[in-house]
Image 1 (cartoon, rainbow, N blue to C red):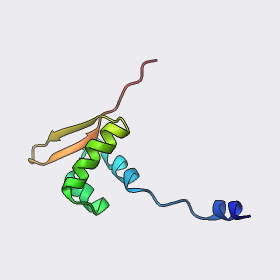
Image 2 (image 1 turned 30 degrees about the horizontal axis):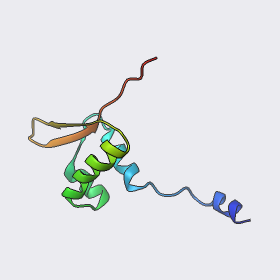
Image 3 (image 1 turned 90 degrees about the horizontal axis):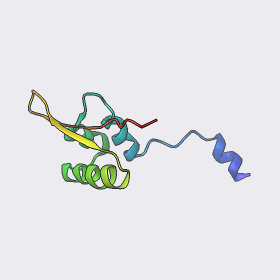
Image 4 (image 1 turned 60 degrees about the vertical axis):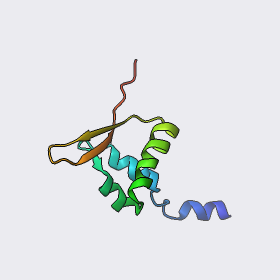
Length: 83
């Protein structure tokens, strides 16, 4: 009966990984500061997560660009599938 109870509960809150990936999908990209505010992590933790988890573990390509305002922004590169 515990399985039925679990299904009736609200869906689990988004994980920090989900939050970061959603923000990285923005067309304008996202700054380290924005990711720090969203996760509560320090800057070095955000950069380590982008490199270690997003790039290496999950296999996403992360593009880093500096905008006209001088802010570095990160975003996921849309991969085109052959087919």
